[in-house]
Length: 250
Image (cartoon, rainbow, N blue to C red; front, side, top):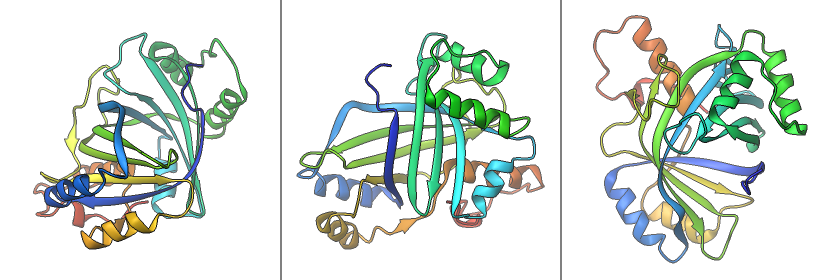
């Protein structure tokens, strides 16, 4: 592999910030976390699902256990761009992620044409099983966004990310298209994800409380799917507050 971590186990909590909260929080975080070596990146994903959207429909029911399959790159893809195939599972609030990487063209051939990867592993066998278990699974939605990622200065397990320009589309499902699609956030909103191995530190909890930043439930694929279903079933006018118009998705 390439030095990237292949297996994750952590607690992930999400928060929706306005521009003022974001700016103030970034000031407060300076002694705690720093922007990592990747700086700001564009993250591009294709989520895979069955023709009847079995995976996301189940996820929206908030079960104790749920799982997703996605293909991800950390920049606009070309054939040889390093791509990650990820199985993401959540059980009782704990997120488990297992992934393998390969060139983007090979990853697409593997997921859509059944072409075996050049190097097999335990994780690739798990992906094989996933593809066989969910009959008819195929590319369902592209989700893309711009991300600033931070890592803890003293706590290497602490990760904080801020996503903007989150967009979805169900056509042109190629990661060569870049961050294009329909916006999920309102202007000035930032989606923050706090990723920790255990309990949140008292310092971070105090900062979030002082800035009135509250935990929310937000699945990018879930929100994109609800937006897609809403636009497909009828609506000719956008709700005034898009975020509030949908049920909260995990």
